[in-house]
Length: 99
Image 1 (cartoon, rainbow, N blue to C red):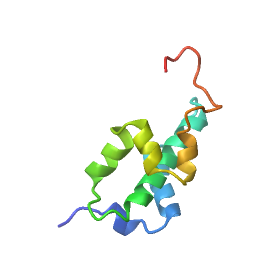
Image 2 (tube, rainbow, N blue to C red):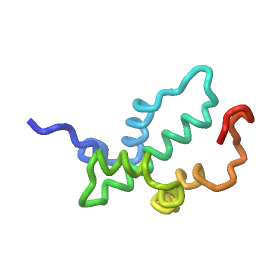
Image 3 (cartoon, rainbow, N blue to C red):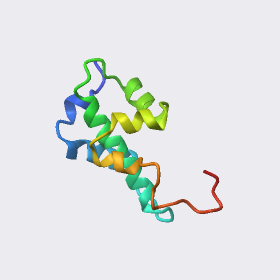
């Protein structure tokens, strides 16, 4: 039996949004901006990857978590997720959290 295929089960961006909402739940104490950003970046990245003939879960994880931010920004260009990766965000973490 073959495993599940995210890209065969999710056909539209809202499908990927639903998956990202499941994988990245909203906390009760955290700033929702950060969870929302993670959700948007994951959904848009996975949605874009559906066109990649060499797509895989490993490639998705590497793209989302391992590549340099400039490369991720380029991959997500012209998507709402790209706005979450701008060099100068107006939203900043607590000054007590090192960046």
